[in-house]
Amino acid sequence: MAKQPVLTPQADDFPRWYQDVVAKAEMADNGPVRGTMVIRPYGYSIWEQMQAEVDRRIKRAGAKNAYFPLFIPEQYLKREAEHVEGFSPELAVVTVAGGKELEEPVVVRPTSETVIGEFMAKWTQSYRDLPLLLNQWANVVRWELRPRVFLRTSEFLWQEGHTAHVDEADARAYAVRILHEVYESFMRDVLAIPVVVGRKTAKERFAGATNTMTTEAMMGDGKALQMGTSHELGQNFAKAFDIQYLDAEGTQQHAWTTSWGVSTRMVGGLIMCHGDDSGLRIPPVLAPVQVVVMAVRDDDAVIDRCRALADELTDAGVRVELDVRVETSMGRRATDWELKGVPVRLELGPRDLAENVVTLVRRIGGGKEPVSLDGIAATVGSALDAAQAALLAEATERRDSRTVDVTTIAEAAAAAATGWARIPWADLGVEGEAELAKESVTVRCLVMPDGSLPDGDAADGALAIVARSY
Image (cartoon, rainbow, N blue to C red; front, side):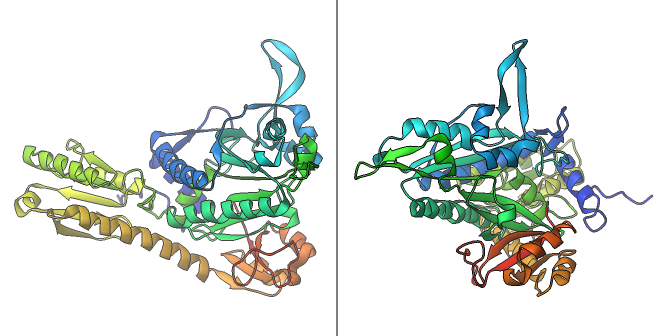
């Protein structure tokens, strides 16, 4: 009987492949309430690495972390009409607590613009208090009708930044800074995902925003995934929540606000952008385990050398896992580490030890080779650097080769069956966007030909990136 594959091949059923990877790489399980998820330790370790890298960039941009309540008075959302209308279908509302019906329902936060706006108003009196740059790491609830682990769940983890500024130009500059210096930088340099940075159309804009900017990534099946967004909120929330300050001339002014966020959706994006038929492939900069040191045989000298090798690499700054589970077959252990996407395996047996070498196995790019144990930290460092570069190059080539330039709505829809289309916004427009939506094809973002952000919804020369999406 032929051996059954560990995973459904991507070419046969990409969604099933994704579910297989999430389960068999021990990333997550479905929670007991429909639409929720349990993130398993290995999946959570990847999220922790993401958090650390994003948080470092956010703090470098000047924002400080805070925490705001999970429960928000329903009346807060109602103050900004477009905001509550945009979120109304997704809200979870608490009407009973402590065995009694509440006098006023409370909403489980879908996002925190409203509650943070209330406290921004309290904390802002003078222009000297601005800019007020806040961020929180939290969970949010948006009741999801078609859940998929990591990609769309009723509860998910994220960071949400909220800022207030003295004028529109300062708010805009900061929202753009977050987009590029935090999100685009992280996704390119850590996740090895070459995102397209653009402006959302009015139809796709965040509820209550005056401008939404986005980072869009192509997945392995050619569909798009929105990885993170940064929003200019104008003075909409400042007026709704009375966020005012005295300017240098003593005149009362409304502030200008922004919000921006990324979530555990990025874990799903990581899987679908880089994974292959053997499982995950994790970029070394992100990988919670960059190298696994494996003892091939139950041999005391081999196991001792593996421990010393793991310590040597750890001292060199490499994130290492030691695998001396010699009671389990080498083939089974190797398959498990391939599933988890660990970039490099170092396999050591008695013969290797006698020859002062170790077998280096590359998860990204494939291949194995004996390398000297002398100078192993430098050898491993080079292998990790090569793997990081290879993933980014591969994802870039896929995105570029599967993005085609078109001039008609029909051509755009056809191209979206296998990848992305790029069409002049002047040739598509709002009516064309509505036509594509009937076929479940959306305008992911607008970009200028040189890759810069359009200045306004209908900027001359802007191109629309069109795709099916998750």
